[in-house]
Image 1 (cartoon, rainbow, N blue to C red):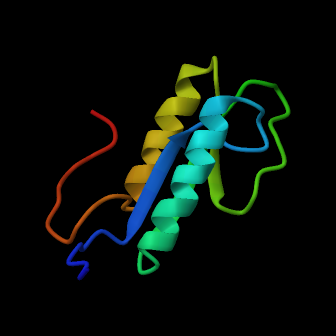
Image 2 (image 1 turned 90 degrees about the vertical axis):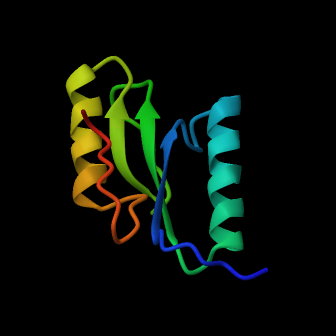
Length: 97
């Protein structure tokens, strides 16, 4: 199957291993599967922390959000926008409105 996608960065936002919950397992597995299926794209995660000190995440987690802190979600949106995540060469989409 030929891949014509111009998207080169893909972000997954949600819980991530080693956080112990089903969503963390799902997000981690999904990121790994997409990364394997699209090796030309850079996959990264923005993980949500439920504890103050966070977790020791793998390198794929590039930004952390504090679950109960609204400004940290806005900083994550800024990070994703600066990183040009999910944008093709002509996309004007923004993660923050």
